[in-house]
Image (cartoon, rainbow, N blue to C red; front, side, top):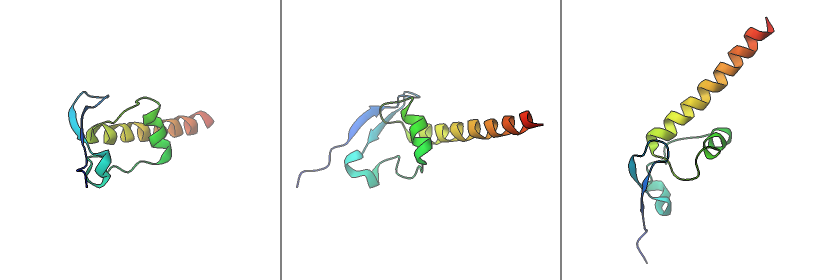
Length: 79
């Protein structure tokens, strides 16, 4: 059995280096970051390669903050 290859990458968002373990996904640094399909789409519309864990978490929070802001603005506009 051939050992699983890992790839050194630079995060497209912040430029930090990290090791992508897509071949051993349960060992990859991104495994614990849960994203909804809408959050995943938000990120993939902006980036076409892996991001570091910190940026995935930050972009998830950014998306959630924008959605919250949009809801607040919608409620305020209805008044």
